[in-house]
Length: 499
Ligand code: AMP
Image (cartoon, rainbow, N blue to C red; front, top):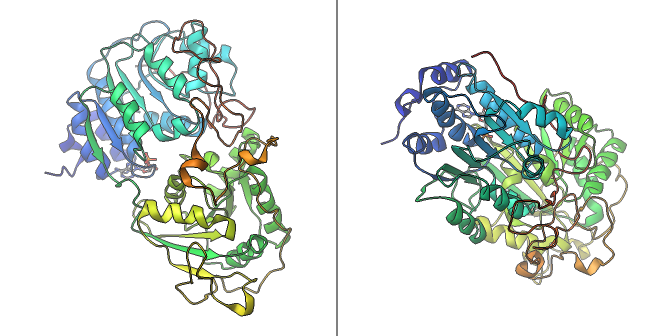
């Protein structure tokens, strides 16, 4: 039986009131599937992407628990711990707790990098109902005895796949080692590869599993297209595409931070204003860019995968993959930024010859062949793609996106730029993934070595982080450390509204 109202799900009155005020009339599928189980005290694995309403799927039953089991948190303790991979996402989660909890009035705190440790420690002094944290900063706070985790009643691990991708596994294990054995666990991930299954198996007790988007299935409402192009044809192609005013709010993905900046520059040469967000931008710059995009002042936002992760901007009409991601799951995340809340969306991916294998991996994952058009200019005599190419001959006749005049090509892209790793040039370029390598090889990395937009390699197991929590120094994986990389979106610290 599908429950169709929040009241039927069994949520407490103050939460129903806040939901009505937030104009959430009916539960989303993940909410109607997950909430009854969480209310009944079960551990949960939720397989859902951002945009499905998964934050409320855990926030609502947690608020219900707080509303129905009022007790003052002990000093420096948290009753609920939510771990999320990025500062932005943590801020959004906390905001959701505030919105849905406005009549429950839980005490809350945010523990994320980029904010003085002392201030966060003070905000935790009296203890809080809900603590939302990124793993590196939380580890620091625990190490400094600013927070204790032995009173945690409910533990949420959000975006588990992203956490692992960002190299947080050791910090997570160390944090979990500090949690009491008797606790409830809610585990959310957009994808469930083997290593995530393994982690879930270790953390959860007899969990119920709910899934809303079958893994590797892209949203049905997204119209997908791939455009074969030459690498140096991409800037002109993008400008051409964006000259169509029907493309009213577009998120452009670049694999690299420098690439993102070049895209913005190229567009500005073509007379198209655009903003960029990535790990090299300061927090105020990122906030300004996001705000401009959200309120429609900027039509084009260029982002790297990590910077865009978890950002919820309604009404994105188009996603453009200026570069294809080398991790196929990222494609699903990227295009999931459009077609949200029941709307239609269009995802257009540029694919140069070096990216053919990335496209193959993506199509294998999503189990569809994305309709393609060929806009390469170096095809001899306008021949279609050669049979030996990754995708073989094109399947669709050339069709131009955009109705504007062809714009001059802005600044060319350098061929084969490395995946963005924090602006540091890797001395050994052979270490970079290449599209023509087999996928397993491209993604293989030594245990304990994470990799991300911010670039530094993680420390191998045991180098800085052992299995023990006490006295260990945590590595601070990307997304947390560099100044302004994943900064707070909102005001920091605990809020203790009068009960
Ligand atoms: P999330 O998947 O948690 O990132 O949520 C995506 C968006 O959906 C957020 O902007 C929420 O405010 C919105 N949302 C969540 N649940 C509902 C609901 N039941 N009805 C309408 N909007 C919702």
